[in-house]
Image 1 (cartoon, rainbow, N blue to C red):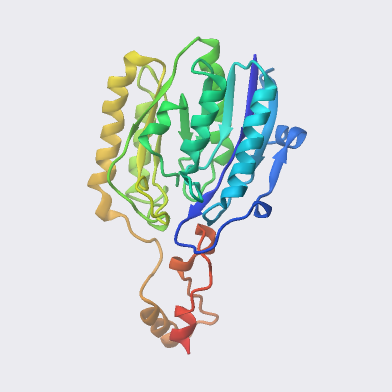
Image 2: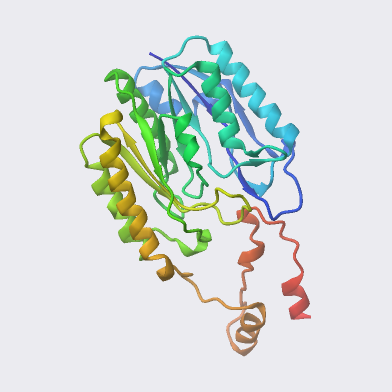
Length: 315
């Protein structure tokens, strides 16, 4: 069995006025990529693996058109060079926006599907903060995302993506992903998966996974710092074949309804307030040092980190 691995990952903050250039990416190729998941899992299963290209994902501004085109072209070229393959195992993020293109994942996956044809199975692992258009299921058979925020199951998810792909190929299954999108968009800070109400909702995925014909399920919170029409939450259920789609849709809708019904219960897990309020609390406290975090200008969520509001208020 021959599997191609690779991908392009990025979390794009469209409110950052800058652009992310090519030299900002750390790119893995060849043997270096074979040391990463999902390649390691595939190799341990005795699978013939062809590495292509993958960049270590991070959050920053919209990706410069040249940078995206360069990475995409290299990935497609390597897939073509790999020749006949049984499947493709991708590592993506789900919230990548490219300059002048929009949703980069859709553009990339559409081109990959056109390159390998309709019969080659494709799996992709995603970040829990991906913004997933329903049409993504038109190009990828298997979509699976992290279930923890903060993310502690990254490696586990990438392994799972590989295992489900191999299971589908060996059993001659034709998996597809059912995507349901509840109209909820919350900032990542509001959804901590080991705190309520998120903890209970994420436990519902175990029930979905145990349903006959369903191979996997995911709940993505989405990425709030992207001014795009497809920003928001999504529930995904991966079915073995067409006949399980109706039940999968029913199960996914149940999770989506729970997320919707609890939308007003999500809140920050730390004390919060306006800049003025936080500074007054700090001044009144006898604890030093006193830390105030500007979550709106959070560079780990791709913000520019140069907004002077807090400094202005302190002065």
